[in-house]
Image 1 (cartoon, helix red, strand yellow):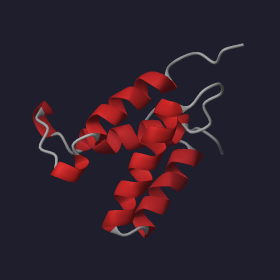
Image 2 (cartoon, one colour; image 1 turned 60 degrees about the vertical axis):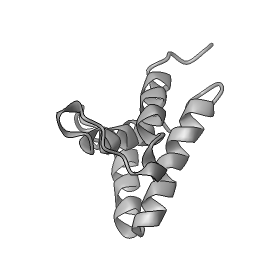
Image 3 (spheres, one colour; image 1 turned 120 degrees about the horizontal axis):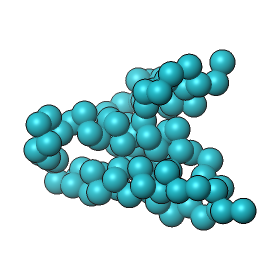
Length: 95
């Protein structure tokens, strides 16, 4: 179906990412989220994981109610990574 709405999980790729997260252990979820954010920030050329990066950034934002960040020590860099990835996913494709 592709994309059916404007939300961070309203497309097939992000929905598949969410299913993978649901099936993963808590430790594996952090690895999956961190991995997509790091790959997005470090990507050059065409960005293939934009939908997953937006979904991962939305998950990080959901953990910050009222805008106050309360990360566990191991998660301290995830909000910065999500912000970096969100910015990277909005850059136009270089031609």
